[in-house]
Amino acid sequence: MKLVILDRDGVINHDSSAYIKSPEEWRPIKGSLEAIARLRKAGFRVVVATNQAGLGRGLFDMSTLAAIHERMSDAVAAAGGHLDAIFFCPHAAESDCACRKPRPGMLLEILQRFGVEASKVTMIGDSLRDLQAAHAAGCQSILVRTGNGEKTLKAGGMPEHTLVMADLAAAAAHLAP
Ligand SMILES: [Mg+2]
Ligand SMILES: [Zn+2]
Image 1 (cartoon, rainbow, N blue to C red):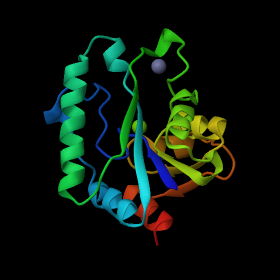
Image 2 (cartoon, protein in one colour; image 1 turned 60 degrees about the horizontal axis):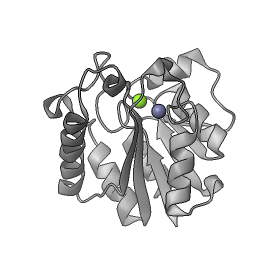
Image 3 (cartoon, rainbow, N blue to C red; image 1 turned 60 degrees about the vertical axis):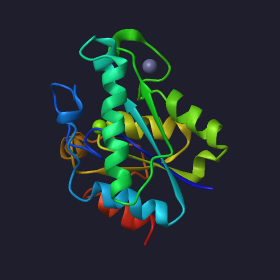
Image 4 (cartoon, rainbow, N blue to C red; image 1 turned 45 degrees about the vertical axis):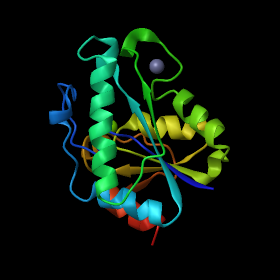
């Protein structure tokens, strides 16, 4: 099975330093929905793994997150794509949980759930912690320059063998040429 794991904010949709707290604030990055459709048509399962510390901080609740994810799933479906699962870490940054990236907990859970080998899976993210989680889980990683991507690239320190692509559309074209 081919599987790709996507970070959400800054990869699929525009990020906000004030968090995405409502479905209305969820706005897709140009080409990202079509990119997910492209991956699906090439036989990839597409799974989202996102840190949502705003939950842990009480900025929005679980039903609002579900509504945001419904909007995202609907938008992806309207473009011909499909999200096979959405995994999220609901904990605050200081909670020291095993699932918040850069820890690999969510990714390991995804690998187990779908029964895929880590080395065959690519994680696509815009922040160092996405790449670090991928590295810790044994997955490949692609940094996109959208969201925090440019900042991440400038700061350096990325795991070895990290590929850098303009955006999710370019990453999908690379994985599904
Ligand atoms: Mg991100
Ligand atoms: Zn967590």
